Amino acid sequence: MIGLLQRVSEAAVRVDGETVGAIGPGLMVLVCAEKGDSEREADQLLTKLLGYRVFSDEAGKMNRSVTDTAGGLLLVPQFTLAADTRSGTRPSFSPAAAPEDGRRLFDYLVRQARERHGIVQTGVFGADMQVSLVNDGPVTFWLRFDPVGASR
Image (tube, rainbow, N blue to C red):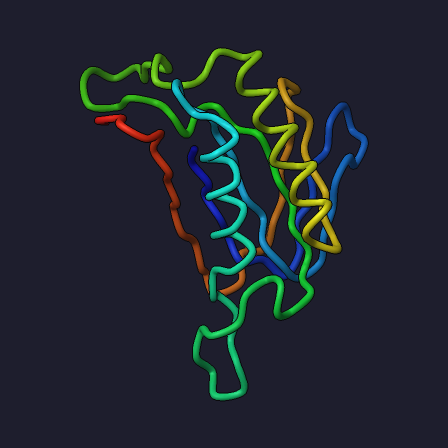
């Protein structure tokens, strides 16, 4: 699974002109399931997201996690993160999980996040979304967890 996390001072997702998810300070995370991913990779991604130290402590060092700061977590499904861009000028999305698997793993990740963290908002799987955010820093990290035995 792939998570592109951005430390934000605020972020929101709109679908058909309606806000479906919004947070103040926290992490906005674009999430993508790839072929072969399972709940195991979703669990690994969530554990990393909740514990990743990207917020400043009193000394200005990135030593605090979204859990430590009680920040918001906005999870947004985005299959295009799996794009193979190595050749040509049109991306291939063949590495992405099938839509039904992607939805199942995204929904699983959201359920687990809501059990483990206080503020969790989401985008809508398969929808045409407009995402707005104020990247704080800017701070952006790309996290990826491959299935056991996968060679990508």
